[in-house]
Amino acid sequence: YLHWYNPHPHAHASLVTVTLHFLAALVIFTTPSSSSQLSVPHPLFLLIGHATIMPDRQSQNIRSSGTNNIIMQDDNSTQVSGFNRTKRQWARGFLWITSLLLIFDKPIFSLLSSSCAVYTMHGGAWLSHKNIKWMGASIISFLISLYALALRINSDFVNEEKAYELKTMLDIKHRVAEIVWGGLLLLMLGLTVKERIDNAIDVTSDVMGSISNTLSTKKKDKAKMKSG
Image 1 (cartoon, rainbow, N blue to C red):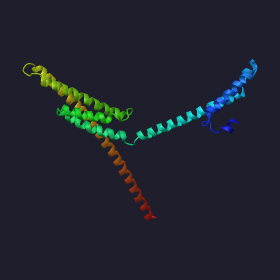
Image 2 (image 1 turned 90 degrees about the vertical axis):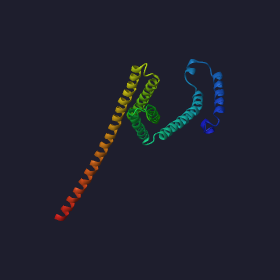
Image 3 (image 1 turned 180 degrees about the vertical axis):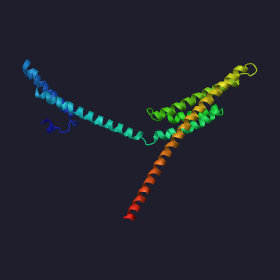
Image 4 (image 1 turned 135 degrees about the vertical axis):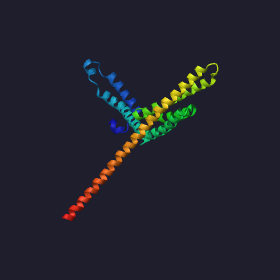
């Protein structure tokens, strides 16, 4: 009768709940208090529990389904094809500039280019080993550039006549840091270019091999047709 009267529990859930609780109170006061009767749940209590629990379960299902839809929409919006690859390409471009600036003793400009590389890579996926590799290279380039710039500024403030050895040591330190890391960075970037060239050569050789096999097969077919 309850479901026939109220097929939509959300419409009058509060009124029905209050009515059922009032009927339950009447049952409690009119039923004799014996242990055998109290041990068995009254059907009215089961009806009250069903009427009060079902709206909450339905609302929870609605909220959970809405949350799942939002999460799926967010995942689909953030996963763009080629997003991380484009970031790595831009970062490698900035690192090429950084390595050359470090070798030619331009720490201010290398600091700017390395900071651009770090900013480019910070929005990529952190769980990708390729992104971690180039993000680490960008951060190290930024720190080396900052270190070289600080040593060079300190060297400029040192009087060469009074502290020649200190000035020379500062100059050597910042040049060694720039040349060593600039060379390593060029090596990393060069190996990446070599790997891409090798992959392109392998793909080209595979394509040429398939084309030659197709042509040889066609020639054999034509020779068989002529002989037949």
